Image (cartoon, rainbow, N blue to C red; front, top):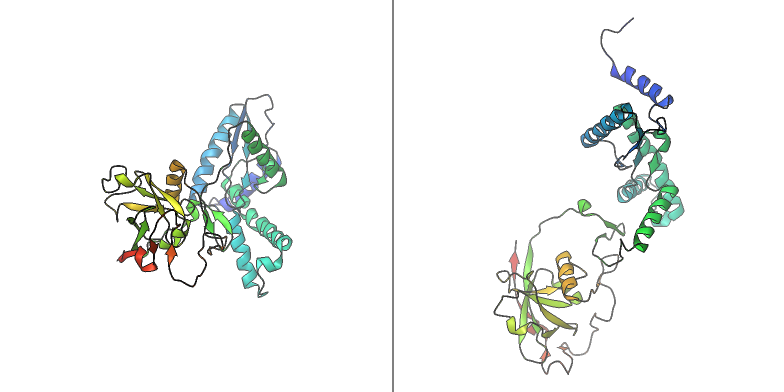
Length: 342
């Protein structure tokens, strides 16, 4: 006897199970047909599907079912993404709530990874159940996870091959670094916040003269990693200084003055310090002019102990190299002024 109302929660799982058990979604059923493949954009294993996933997967499902009806050999490859940072956060939160009073480092890599994999099985199962409830006609016999050993080996093989063919190259670039989780994070995972700060004006002595050039910056603490000063090529105030060198205050490093359109003559003093290893814009300027990339922070975001950090001396002065200038610059000489900005 038919029910008065349609109950999808009762009907759809039964129909989907029949489809899946019959192998209706398996690749190879139309072995003689032209291959048609879609790799599902893998959802994060830590989460659950949202409306965006529902729309995206519905469109893929329509294409796959349509091509099957046309006689093509269709593979809709399902899988989930490891979402490393998010997964790590979830497992660390579980550790904190367990009352064990132990960190992941104290737990050890092997045990922590075991717990991560255990969480993946729980959370990943939620996503695949949701995809099945949507009616997604994936070939579940081929389900993969981005950290699967075979998949990782395939990725390495492809990237190594591309590198050997000259289609990839190795180079240094800036990343968003998380000093808590000790890992790089994507631009999408960075939360930008506007804060009130100060605009600092600092005098950089010109090599071989008593002149100086004043730079304006909101980040004076990064001056330890400065490797250049940039001025606009059309700025008449500094045209005679382009190509000359300044001596970096507090450190004594000899760095060039370069002409680059990145510098805004209307902003600050029109002269900006360039720290290629700690600012994305400075990184690009540094590449254009071959400036040194000097990292002054360690993985915990603390200033590193290195040769460019000045060591305490009996006299509270900073002297430039004798060959560079005859002037001795005292700390009060380098600070021009500062003002609060919003």
